[in-house]
Image 1 (cartoon, helix red, strand yellow):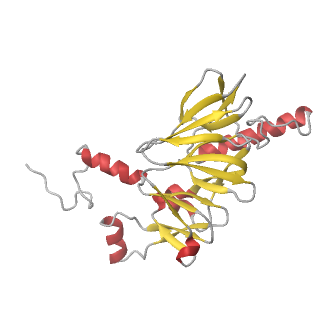
Image 2 (cartoon, one colour; image 1 turned 135 degrees about the vertical axis):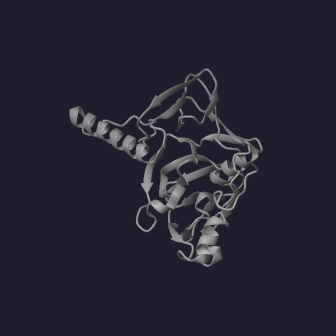
Image 3 (tube, helix red, strand yellow; image 1 turned 120 degrees about the vertical axis):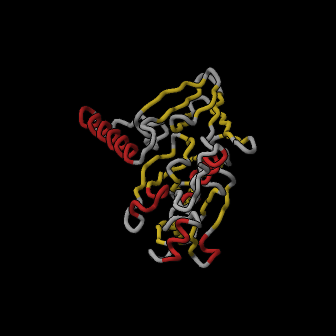
Length: 272
């Protein structure tokens, strides 16, 4: 059963989801806006099992063995989300006795998108992008590791979505859709601009030059740091036009908090 949803709004979009009787959608804690009275809300530590039961594991194996496996799976999910710096809980919404409506939104001004999974390709999303999904979509944490390592910034921890159904994501500013295959097979972007990409895209992080004069100029005065995200392969990539760091810096400057300039006050003067 296809999830009926509509993305509304402009500068700060929201998703309005219409649920059929018994249909369940889940979200990260803090992304819920409103619901009709016939939609139940339940907060759980476990993510969805992908069996359409909204995270209630089927009793494969039965008895104490099945309960132990379920408890271990929940503990592993909670541990992964703790390491990722994410909320420990999911909120589940189910329509009872008729159709119901639920509203969700991201946490920053920007665009939203509904991704349709057909079971052939997984989607990976930046850890703050996920808003809500059908209970038939499985949620997981993907630590990119390897050549990315801790230098990946926002991209070090990715959320993985598999199965069939709708996933709703949000970003800051506007979305930009690209395919690295259209640009020679590889693109390099600010690590904070990556929102989501399809399975088959290789994600990594590379240094921008070395620790030389130009590298330091890029980091200190260019505002780009010493690393860029690399995306290679053939598949859909969604970028955002505004980074969280850029928004934070703009707000800080507007509030008069950035008095030191890009050199951290090394060359700044203060009226005496």
